[in-house]
Amino acid sequence: MAFFGLFGKEKKETLDKGLEKTKESVLSKISRAIAGKNTIDDDVLDNLEEALITSDVGVETTLRIIERLQERVKKDKYLGTTELNHILVDEVASLLAENNAMQVMDFTDPLPAKPYVVMVVGVNGVGKTTTIGKLAHQYKQAGKKVYLGAADTFRAAAVEQLCIWGERVGVPVIKQQQGSDPASVAFDTLQSAKANDADVVLIDTAGRLHNKVNLMNELTKIKNVMQKVVPDAPHDVMLVLDGSTGQNAFEQAKQFTKATQVSSLAITKLDGTAKGGVVIGISDQFKIPVRYIGLGEQMTDLQVFNREEFVKSLLQIG
Image (cartoon, rainbow, N blue to C red):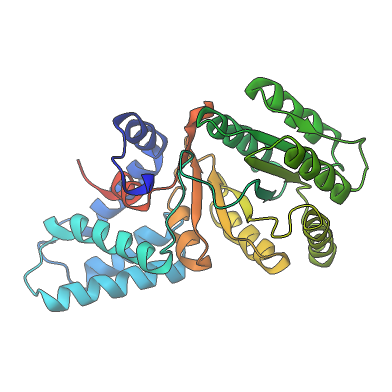
């Protein structure tokens, strides 16, 4: 799979640039944690624990990382602080691989279904519609025929925004009047996509966490109606989270995973924030694959998440 292929130089540069602020913040905290120490002792690990928690990695995930480091130190009693960075990169990458073994598809990979239906969920303001636009662009660039469904019918601006993205990317958007039944829009979208031999269908949904029961009912209804056209739809329920909100992103992930069966995550707005450590915590805690990360404004700045490269970009010195 492309996931294991060469991580291109351009992608690597975008990743490094997008995570610059987080990396500076995390590495300065790690440097303070080991200042004046030659060996990895309890003090160093305590200081490192604080550094990771304040870098938005999350308490539970941080404790798991510290436990793993303690095991490494026990095994090799002569580990010095100069080796801490290498061990940390190693252990965090291993942790994410163990908890999140699913391989993430690249845009050029064969799709598991036709049409491949993705229902996109998340609160307003996280970059949901922009993420859909960027996904549509990258799938189209990879030679896939894409349809968009404007099923966020409660916010007039949402339909308009999706239509702008549709025009920009050159893909059709199926919509109805504001206030229409979102399930009806999803139904129409799938019918059009199927009739026109589309490869990918991206369904935008209302960004509200007004009430978990209402949200659950609405999303369940959309799923049920879509299945009348494509029996196993949606193939992916993607939750979009704003990485720059740090711990708030954890809370939203909790609420949405309770309300519906989320199968993948896209974490946006990682450029320009020092809170990128939240990706490690969310990826570990929810056992849901992070599929995409947003690293800038350009259409190509939405990257397929490569956990090894992400951890290296975030934690590796030099």
